[in-house]
Amino acid sequence: MANRPALHAEIVGWGKYVPSKVLTNEDLAKSVDTSDEWIKSRTGIAERHIADPKEASSHLATKAARAAIAVADINPRQIDLVIVATVTPDYLFPSVACQVQDALGIPNAAAFDLNAGCTGFIYALSVASRLIAAGAHKLALVIGAETLSRVLDWQDRTTCVLFGDGAGAVLLQASEAPAGLLGCTLGADGSGADLLQLPAGGSRRPACEDTVKNRQHYLKMNGPEVYRFAVDAMVRASRAVIEQTGVLMDDVELVIPHQANVRIIQSAVKALKLPPEKVFTNLARYGNTSAASVPIALCEAVEQGLVKQGDHVVLVGFGAGLTWGAALVQWGAPLPVKLPFWKLALYHAVRPLALARSTSHRAALRARTIISRVDLNGHKP
Ligand code: COA
Image 1 (tube, rainbow, N blue to C red):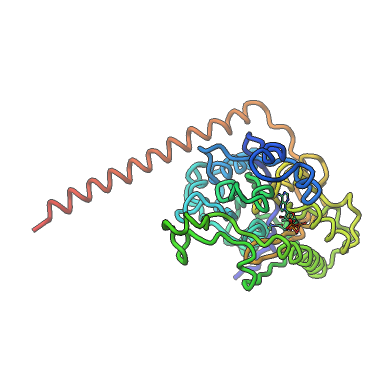
Image 2: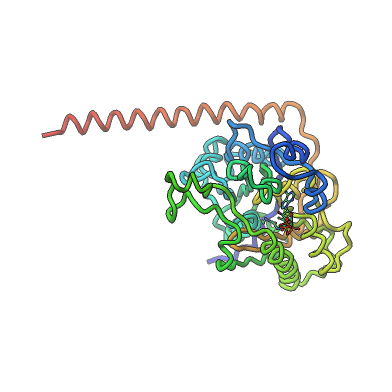
């Protein structure tokens, strides 16, 4: 077999979407025993976005993906892999990724969801990058999308103040240029499963009257224990990825941590001896959006001009599982030129086209079912 050049997964597109409804700390203080002062001083969060009742994770994911596709300025039909990291899928099955694939009108892409808690996006980035490096795929859409507001207990002040809804996406393209994921470290410790979980609704405790009565369809968390784990996990994962790649911490231009609690970030930054200006935070406006937090933050950092071609960026996170992970990315793409009006209009036109394609596919599937039923009946003895 002829030697093929080494392939890298370069980030060529990025996008985010957050629902328009904003819930402030003051709003929350009207329904639970909390205060703006408590939430800000203990977490750094001022407000979060909440999905409209008609919006599910797939809708948020699709909108973030469309933004990433527009930045990359590519034909979505070329995408051959869709991974959605989420803990709040629309359904247990089918996957959010399949719904995104359908909504975007991408034919024949492999599509699946990945659940690694709030570390999900870093896991998904690693999987997609390695599939590209192996030559299995050429253009991958990697999304983190969550509607955590649907699984929060709005009577539990210890959790409902922390989370928000949103989605972030990147497009990875196979490239011979040495850019993209330079290294990645992933880990898990299932013995910490009970520290952060959604107890019911799965195969262990299916939904029943008792699970509803006991509020087991809501997220449960041991905050202080998760806090202790989080600081340690972020420090260890960041150090491990730096060691793995041989890039010096001084040569890292930006660190984008999972946005859960500003105190967790500050403790990790202190332990890593990082100058605070090298660490990106935006959790004041979004809260913890779980698997969406890192891609939303990455997208905003790029939009604010904090990431330039050639920069080394560390993405680091932790989450339910327990899981943790860090990725070191070398930014390859220049900031995009503003798309001309006609091209933006074209990207908007793609939406009704994808819808028409999906509707005709569904109609064809239904027609085939009816025909096969008639056929079976005709052959009945
Ligand atoms: N408003 C007001 N008081 C609150 C409150 C709220 N929203 N939530 C908790 N409190 C109270 C507690 O009831 C407790 O009162 P008590 O001392 O009378 O019992 C007090 O504040 C301190 O609670 P504690 O849990 O010790 O606070 P904390 O400083 O550890 O902060 C978290 C709580 C949840 C903010 C913090 O533990 C945390 O961020 N943990 C990690 C969570 C996380 O990152 N999860 C996502 C993982 S991906």
